[in-house]
Image (cartoon, rainbow, N blue to C red):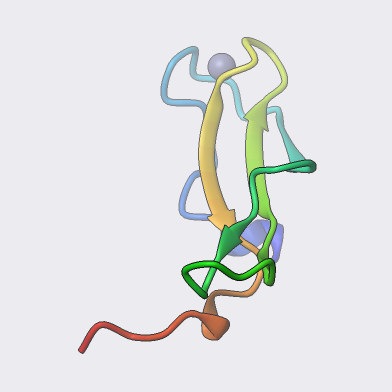
Length: 68
Ligand SMILES: [Zn+2]
């Protein structure tokens, strides 16, 4: 996902459009196997003015099994 495809272009809390992109590191992997270690890191869209997390998503959504 590139920046111009973001569903959020503006902070819903303070109205700023000065957004930054971040990676979650450490233990916050969202795995696609119940006991697996494989997974995608979370990515975050952060408001650079007030610090709110305005959007978050996994890096590789196609790896996750569909529910239907
Ligand atoms: Zn903000």
